Amino acid sequence: MSKLERKQDRAPVPSEWEYAPAPEARDLVKLRERYGHFVGGEWLEPRETYMTIDPADEQPLAEIGQATPAEVDLAIGAAREAFENGWSDVSASERAKYLFRIARILQERSREFAVLESLNGGKPIRESRDVDLPLAAAHFFYYAGWADKLEYAFPNRSPRPIGVAGQIIPWNFPLLMLAWKIAPALATGNTVVLKPAETTPLSALLFCDVLRQAELPPGVVNIITGDGHTGAELVKHPGVDKIAFTGSTEVGKAIQRELAGTGKRLTLELGGKAANVIFDDAALDQAVEGIVNGIYFNQGHVCCAGSRLLVQESISDPLIGKLKRRLATLRVGDPLDKNTNVGAINSPQQLDKIKELVASGEEEGAEIYQPPCRLPEKGYWFAPTVFTNVAQSYRIAQEEIFGPVLSVLTFRTPDEAVEKANNTPYGLSAGVWTEKGSRILAMSQRLRAGVIWANTYNRFDPSSPFGGYRESGFGREGGRHGLEPYLEFE
Ligand code: NAI
Ligand code: MG
Image 1 (cartoon, protein in one colour):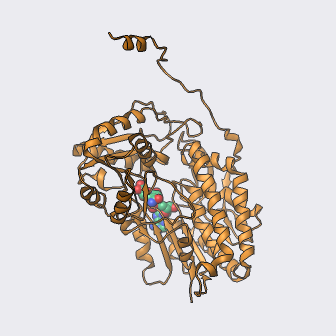
Image 2 (cartoon, protein in one colour; image 1 turned 180 degrees about the horizontal axis):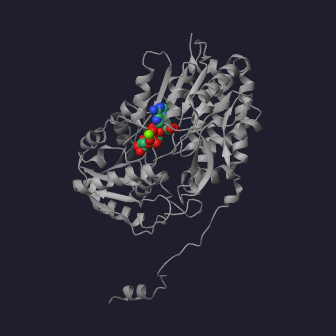
Image 3 (cartoon, rainbow, N blue to C red; image 1 turned 45 degrees about the horizontal axis):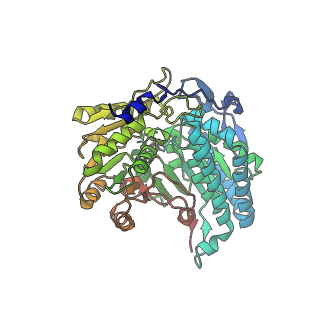
């Protein structure tokens, strides 16, 4: 044995590292037993209810209203009344003031909101604390800045609000999606009826408290809860002037069919199956971090997740080796533990969908890898998963899994990378990893996706427009572009 090797043998390497538990304080959140609908600034006692749970342990959290058509009608009436009798006359700088207040209150109460978001949605507290909450507040700050500058944003076009916006959001980023919807709607002078997803209503309901604190006039924002039936009522109600929807492509298509010919405005932010393309000159360790952030962030419940990894063949083996070693360090478990990287799957329905697609990948012949990890017994969990030997025709390469599951494909030339990346009905996002600036520019011209990240992934900023092509939807949220869907022009 060489001298060096013997020396290494004697090095005091600990055999195992254990993390001490680092739980965030759950009692920061005070839940009510039962929540109604927030209509015209008041709580409406719900006619029908259901129970919302903590997906990490299946414990019931609170009873939630399931809004009936009559309740949807009341909410839309309140929004109309607020629009006609006051809000549309409020000066733009006053509107901005309310948005600034909301942003500041969200910052002040961010710890409470972060805990609630993790409790009801299953996402790790590190993410709700460091991503969802700061971005939600930033979104309100950003659109507060635009409220009194609309005629500069759209010179000579006389921008006017549309009226009542019906907004339907999903469960993967409940408060952040609420911010993406409500901030631009209010900045442009509209009023709102928003429906959060049925599995994650609690942060939207706590947000009603923020609206009261900010003294937003009653009826300007109304929150109704319930499942897809409630959503469908909101979409077809004649009192709504615009629908903004984020969710599945299937429901997006149904909404588009429903609204055809009605003259109602529509924006859709739907699913994705993004390619994350790694060229042989990329910094591999950085790329591994980007891949992990691309698909395991928020348990992969991300519409723009980098769910298809396209690796240049010459670096495939070392890259996949590094990726598997990195996966073994991800900590899966209690969302409220500050050391957790991967939390609970949001619902049993979503867990079933992930399991079904993963089983199809194994059946079709892909090779599965999961790092050793012990999943909690109660609640909904799925281990971080990588599939190699994936063919483009496999369902796991075509369909949105919306879970912590990565499908790896390889390519030899940039042309082949582009062809494979664009071989999808979606077109929301993509990633490119290379040291060459010229290649980044060339790829971003050729990839058919609304958002393209270079040497990074899943980075968001309120000033940057976000949205898709083809089956990923249409319309943009964020940036100056995000104002336009809420305005009419002369
Ligand atoms: P979904 O599209 O059914 O739910 C999203 C929102 O739409 C919820 O608030 C829901 O109550 C509402 N909704 C459902 N049916 C409706 C209808 N007919 N009219 C109006 N609103 C309706 O999504 P789901 O069933 O929760 O998830 C299924 C799949 O969709 C996921 O596995 C994932 O692939 C994809 N998805 C994509 C999202 C994205 O951010 N692009 C978000 C959520 C899901
Ligand atoms: Mg659905």
